[in-house]
Length: 331
Image (cartoon, rainbow, N blue to C red; front, side, top):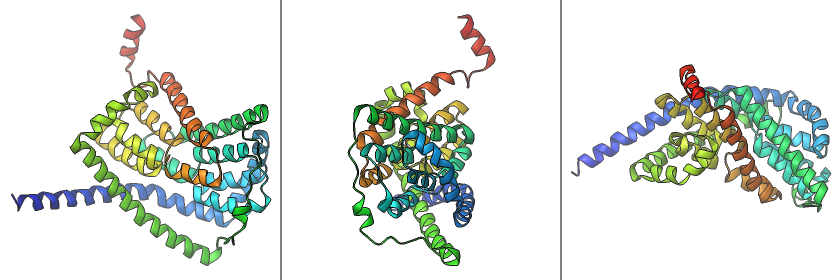
């Protein structure tokens, strides 16, 4: 018995590392080329060009011009890049709590699009449809929040950004120094990504062995029914919702290969993850900036469920064969 357990443990560890490595390689084939392209674009000022294009959109939504640069950085680079833009512009920002919350919600809906949407496409959903969904939800929700504030005075108090401007702001290096810093940071990110993937696989394995997967699926079945999602994707969807699209999408890529999910299931699941993911870390960052929790968490999740429910109704016949549809029509 004592010799069997270590042998079984070693077998599991080898299998875990093998699965993690395959999943990591799949993810890197998507992420790394996009990260390099984004870095090149950033070096040549593409982010500033995007912010200029977004300025009229910000005005329509009711946000100041500086919001365009912040959201462009967030959408094309990352959430942390947008935080850096926030700090760099803090001395010039003049926003109400509603405007800040609306911008933060827009950042949560649409950030890191080149990398995250490449993962969505690899996982099996339409790149154009899910990207348009994220950008549309961001703009629509941001406009709704500012409109409600203008009509009711809700969250109309000005935000004090002096705490951001108080410290020394380190500008990102450019040229060779910038590429060196980027390379070091990228290597660290890749190492962390591999560790996170391994940890998530262990969590999924543990959930299956202990029966938590079945219990959790039963607990969220009402939400799945409303959203039109399959119970089979509940565990990986939840991990993505809580921890992020990168890792949730990577797990869905792996699960889709093994289980051959129907196109509609993949589309609805990845649409949900595209709109609401990393509810813990990303939401905490926005709250630290001063955003309102009802706007950036509660309202965003409610809007996500409404959108997914509507998409579920609109795509109800996707996975049915023509003869099945004809039979249902006759009935």
